[in-house]
Amino acid sequence: MAVSIIIKTLNEQARIAAAIESALAALGTVPGEVIIADSGSTDDTIAIASRYPVVIAQLVAPARPSCGIGPQLGFQHSRGDYLCLIDGDMQLDQDFLAAAIRELESDPKLAGVTGHVEEMQVSSLEFARRVQRGGAEFRVGSIDRMNGGGLYRRSAIADAGYLTDRNLHGHEEFELGIRLRSRGWQLRRIDRRFVRHFGHTINSYRLLLRRWTSKYLQGTGEVLRAALGRPYFIQVLRELPELRLWAAVYLLWALCLLLIVALPNKAAALLLVVALFAGLVAIVSRRKGSVRMGLYTVVAWFFHAAALPIGFFRARLQPDAPIESRIVGSA
Image 1 (cartoon, rainbow, N blue to C red):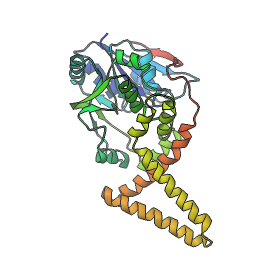
Image 2 (tube, rainbow, N blue to C red):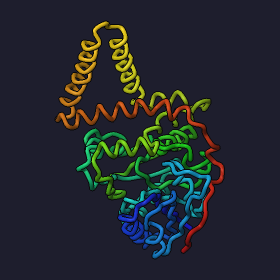
Image 3 (cartoon, one colour):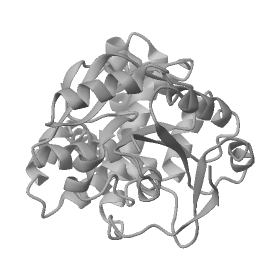
Image 4 (spheres, rainbow, N blue to C red):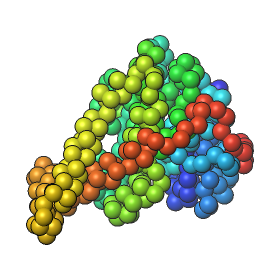
């Protein structure tokens, strides 16, 4: 079997039909299968998916949802020589698979190929900020990770040990990319669309709170913990520039605490703390082009920095151990 398209889902009833239909359409000229890797949806995701000729694998206790567990669950039940990862709120471009397979077949050192993720919902400050800052999601050519998914060579994944680390609530594509590259494999983005992404439309601050409660923001700390003792640990430190930013946040917090503790006039100390925060927001707002974006960016920094140590000290399970699951339906 050529391609296993793995669609990660958790309560995606609004988008899952379109995601599945796009995947089936993409298999029109390429043999393969569609696997729904569901992390325990409680809405109508499974009922809707059951209408289509797909394999549905769902987590069961004691397995718990995470960003890393969904792809690995799909991989566990897949048969394809190539593995295409998309989310349940994405629509796969119909011509991407054939182009990506040609790219992989032309270069035996390539572990994965992706394309552009077209963001369809940019009203949220989070997705607008992502588009604004560019970065790994937009570079063409050699890349260090395949954010948003893409097409992987199964033999490369086997060489790296497993697809994604079930312990990670974020940074799973980065962690996979660095494991592959440490084994001599390469990743590439071609200049064509991979998927359309219909992201969250909820208020950006509510999304930030949801990502806190879902442990998504703990991903940076978790990936640091996963790399401890590995030969690529120093490389992880170099390739996560946000670590320097979070360190600056910790220094700011330490300064604010010092002011509150050391100054006898607590009202004056609090005013200084507020002034520091307002000054930081003003600087970031100027760079971002608006106070609204500047304030959100600073608040997001604080949330990420607070989540890092929590993620780092979380207990870990063996990442390549079989995931507790059941087959709900099959093609």
